Length: 386
Image (cartoon, rainbow, N blue to C red; front, side, top):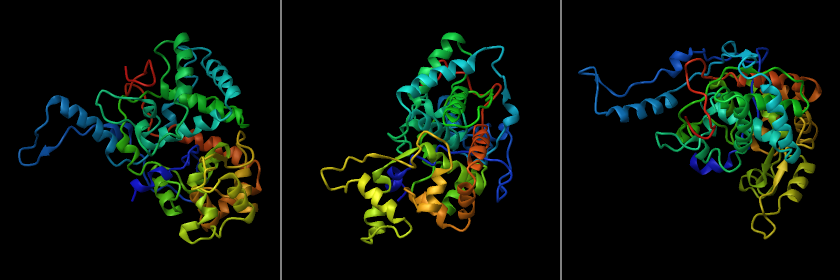
């Protein structure tokens, strides 16, 4: 059943991320140290003889990498391992290089803002902020994260990071990791979407492995999940319910496609009638935006989550409260569930709250399970290991 829903993946609740400590629930998961999480298991052990069995050195190395990425993980956030001004001496002017490069891209494609924030979310939520989402292949030969149907054709932005990385390499060769370039670009994207500028934290290293199988192990949300499923995933990553709602607010600069939600207005759960939780204005809007599949007009067009698709504001939440306007089923649950409705109403009522909380949550997200120090590498090209 899970595979049947793969293509229902939203633009991923993407674009969202992290939050602070004033939330409604306390994360029950205790952080582990980097050495605990990233210490590889060296193969199957014969209990009777207490020795490794049956693997060649090459096979064992491949098993080590996969095992590290498939061990059950508790999230840990280590902003203390990242620092402001990390590249001040080794790559002066880095922030200006990234800002100018991204601004030029956004002038041609305003959707790049949402693409980058979503890309950051997809990278961090799978196995930490290590740029593993950017790899086209790895020496192991396994299918990489980018190739997973859970990421799919809607995942955009890798080419943007390629362009920016090339500009950075021309000034500071072999110095700035792809993981940091993605994080720094995400900061610029948030600023361009109307949030206050912040000095980003640096010091991340790039992963040398990437596995599609890890993406598909319930590490990204589905567009039809209920609140319990969402809370389990976000809790596993170290976020409480308030932070989860804030992250989903990243849809403020997102788009989705008709085939993810149009049945809510046409034939909800095969009842022959629209989803009763939708406002009439929203139903009419969906019917107009999404021609019925089965007609020659249907082309699965994109639809904005709200009327300000390049601004990170609270309109996404206001529309939920005032108009019962939600596109994805998961978004609809936010306003219907007693646990999340008060948070949505709070975000909707205070236009300053979401713009304050979102960058705080993103800062937490971008410190999720990072590689630092002697871990990982600094890739020369983001699409391949060194």
